[in-house]
Image (cartoon, rainbow, N blue to C red):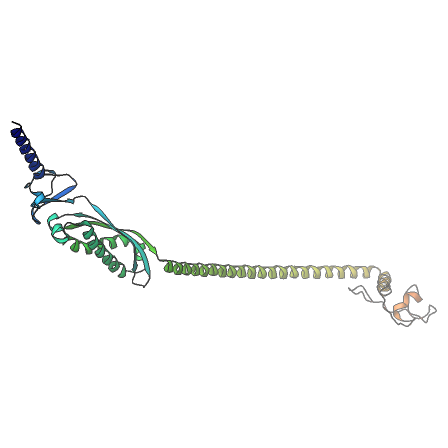
Length: 315
């Protein structure tokens, strides 16, 4: 009885093992390749419960799971040269998915690291080609989007041969290298210094124009003022001469006396000037005779001719 029970239990265990080894599950994130002695016999791309021969321990039927999700491959710190000879440091990535599990198994034995190694080589070469055909400013302009599409289109044929579909390629970073950054900084500094010098030159030119205009206006104002002063001075001299003439007409003797006194005051002032004159000269006629007539020192003789008025105030 006990031997029979043991045999039944053993048979159940064997059946369970066979059932377990013949069942495999594919979830929504996976694809499955069924291999029989290393050869592909079936591919399962939809989620579900599937069966295979229960001889996996003899390497008869085995299942290889392939990721179905969109995966990302990064390529960092790639130094590329543009058409002008300068260099950029570029970070890029691609989004891809395994579209054909059978071809993926045949080409890279279903190895994601091996496939990514090949894709990275293709991405590196495509980036270098695309950057090499463009100038220094292209990667920093609106042309960057078309560059990413061009890189993606160049990689797609090689990826298709691996059973991989490239969904997108993105350039995350495009920076100048340290050497180019310094050169660019020096060039920008020189441009700003030249612009500053140009602005200063324009300022100096404007200042010279303003100064020249101010000097010209000052000269014109001074000339106009001198003109007006000369006119006023001439009018004043004419008025004074007119007043002198009227005064002379009213009392010529008094006018001559006044003019002589003014001349004495001017000549005999304490100026340190020495004059040598004869006592009976016409200049001292009012010292000899109160009426101003010329004589021989005793008050006699014929009267001296009347002096004509002079605008200068001296005789």
